[in-house]
Length: 352
Ligand code: F0G
Image (cartoon, rainbow, N blue to C red):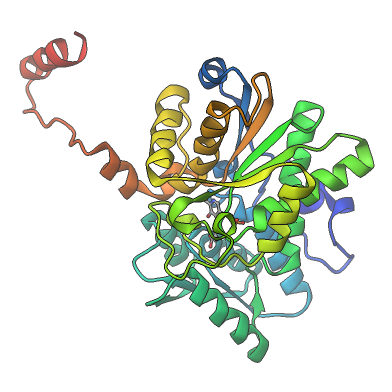
């Protein structure tokens, strides 16, 4: 039986006899082959479905490690800034560990499912009239002055936990893929995957992928080469203008002969619908930056035909029901409770 990341990957993680083996049975997420899109794009495409984690995003991998280490160090409270998923995950693992959790979020710019999670897990929620970058600056400072443990990805234990996804991909495929495509926000996850692939390769000779990271065009500081003061994108998860792990992400892309690229909101939304309707996989908009990016780079010939590609789907589609309903822009057909009318409608409108 799967017992969670800290037990499974103990030898690869900074675990001491004093580290509580906290778990919500995170990790061990599906790697799904996308048959239709593989055929269409003439590549071998898989998705790593991180939305299958306990709180519905990849953050659980890093959070289980960071909260366990905070508990080990005697902290009673954790704090984070978040575009939503980090706050949901921090709140859940803090609850599990019997700790308090404070989350700071950009007012009005987090998906509803994520807010609902933070509320339910009992976090103290502070919503600021600013963006993620402002919130991160504040919690970093606060954690230096008050007895609270910072659990954003600037906490190195977060990347340690998150690197385990790279191990799982290598184990599932027998080796690293040619290309790893991943959304980039605060740039922690791409850095963690690169660390994971590198460490596994050193131990097991599993090879190294090209790291291809994708920012949303309205929030693409690494692509532009300067901070974005007012980042804007429909993919609120990655609405970040000054990524904390900027240098690490650039290093991962350069060292792996990959690239940090951008995708527009339109391209993200096309990928979001395509993934759900062609393959039955529902991932939140920010996650779909990876699929949008693969599509674009295959079209441009930057990803060669025949490549084995893994796209990371960082969060579950259910996190953001509003975007789903808004983009489809259709209302369900409302009919009277009358068999004849309902059947006639189906015969006429659906089965034609
Ligand atoms: N995808 C999703 C669904 C995310 O929630 C995030 C980050 C990313 C991708 C980008 O990962 O920051 O490591 O480059 N969300 C953070 C949060 C910022 O607060 O939940 P990254």
